[in-house]
Length: 92
Image 1 (cartoon, rainbow, N blue to C red):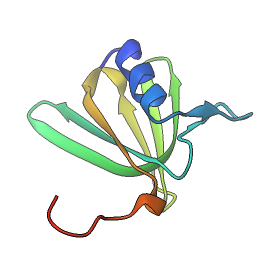
Image 2 (spheres, one colour):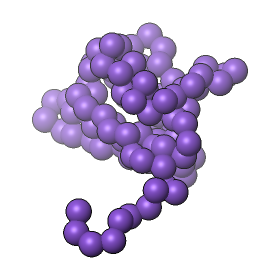
Image 3 (spheres, rainbow, N blue to C red):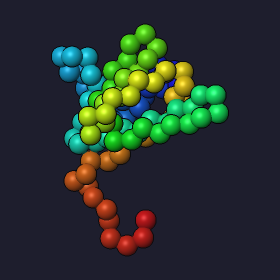
Image 4 (cartoon, helix red, strand yellow):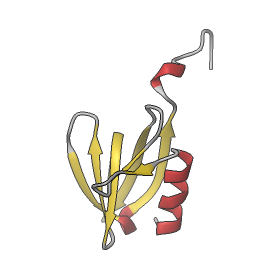
């Protein structure tokens, strides 16, 4: 992932930086990141805050878990809608 790609993901999440440098998605939104290196893959979901420094992305989950990933190893990300939107009735 490039820094431009990550910026686009943070913009989609309407993320804002706090005083400690963490970018936090707006309105209860959460982010998921997908990374791969040397044939192994990792998905990190339910991220409430991200910090980028020197090619590393530090991700903090809603459970307080902290992951440190190489920006170059991340290939995709997703933004979850706010929990208040919930699931719609019927088939999606």
